Length: 297
Image 1 (cartoon, rainbow, N blue to C red):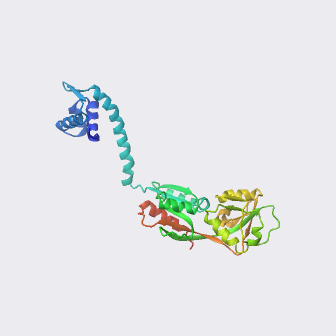
Image 2 (cartoon, rainbow, N blue to C red):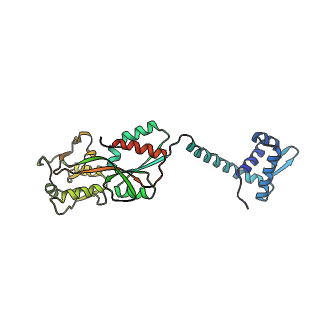
Image 3 (cartoon, rainbow, N blue to C red):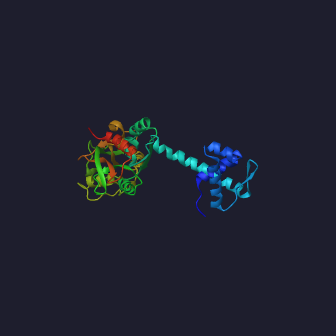
């Protein structure tokens, strides 16, 4: 049996709704022979009589009654599909999927996302928070369109454009009154350290900084979220090194955290990452241009 034809089903439904081939032809702006041909072709396709003509009226057979139930569902699905697809030709900019760290998502992106949604209400933005390693994996498997990641990235499959540097700071419980004006790796190595998980680029940066004076880095706790690290420090469970971005404007300490610069200085560099060779939609281009606004002047 051949596949169903939606035009034939629509004609069949009109004949049933209007009660005659003539009325259906007028509603569909077709000739009566064309309507008759479509219904007959549908009957041949299904190998069943669907409509009985009695006088000028058209009545359903038992097969026609059952087909009508399916027809209503199929035509409704067809209409929903056409409506959904129509937006692609009506100024719709599509979906743009962005991957980044929770810190960048919380502290750097909100103004940009708000501006994009205000200027382009038909743009759909999807965000995924995670470590750089995971973001790269999702970019290469086409689960993301853009990434805001810690640099450098040694991967020939992507292009990375540096945007800004984010200085790192040491944080301690507010009750600590024995802190120097600047924190060194050797001082930090003596603290109960709360760090990010090993796959995170931030963890690697901190480890490299500490190994300038300390041979081993052994945290007492590990988290994949800077906000969780801050929370543990605030409760007095240890000390940590976090991005300045996560400390808010001016790095103003909270009631439960003391912020101290580190020496030598260390920073992480954030860049815009895109998969090489991936075709960019208009929406992706707009979002990428907006994210470039994070670049340091």
